[in-house]
Image (tube, one colour):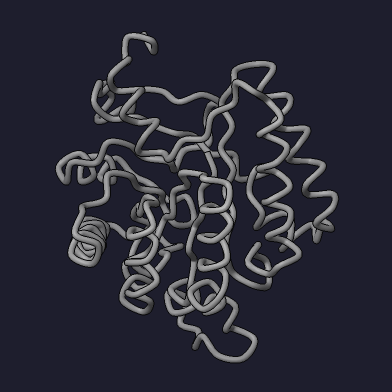
Amino acid sequence: MLTVDFDGPSHEIGRKLRPLGINSWGRYSGRRGVPRYLDLFEKYQIPATFFVSGYDAEYYPDVVRDIHRRGFEVGAHGYLHEGWALGEEESELLVRTHHILADLVGQAPVGYRSPSGRKTARTMRVLKELGYRYDSSDKDFDLPYLAHIDGKRCSDMIEFPNNTSVLDDMPLYKFSMTPPSEVLDLWRREFDSLYAENGYFILTFHPRSGWGSGIPSRAKIIEGMIRHIQQYDDARFFSLAGLADWCIANHAWFE
């Protein structure tokens, strides 16, 4: 699964920064990064998932419509890429973004990834009420599993854990400042290891400039990763919605 966190200007606006000058990296997502990845995924026929915040959808409505029009999944990703404790405000923001995306593309999102990884028991309750089929926020396992709501397993909702310490471009480019060639080598090794052990691989990246993978040299790394995966004849790409449907239909596999 190749998953793209849009992370446009919402990331800065949510932190009370004007998305201008040094803080304009997020605008690259809508102007160039996302279109570049749409072309790349079409080239290789990859059914990728894009997680989009409500604010970014309002800021770049035509880009989000294009994601959907070209056959890719649009998932929810907060409203202002919230990186702070929300309390009771969380429910309102989840509902707001849900309706923004549904109205924009004519189809309600079925998947959610928490911005900044924040999540509460309330999160899952609201997502379930809105009809979501999966969440991809937790970091606690290396395979999909049935989601838990109020301590009970839910047979029609899946948790897709994502490894944001290694299989995510942000910490590698922002904190360790790893060269793209080394990032590709790391991801190849991670894929080979996971393939040998359990066959579940989920990669997260951002089409921003700065610490994202939006620029051409870093997009080449994603293309290199696609080519590496395609060397395995029995490897198959999924959108998260597509895999969620399979998991729900075969939930006895998780028992």
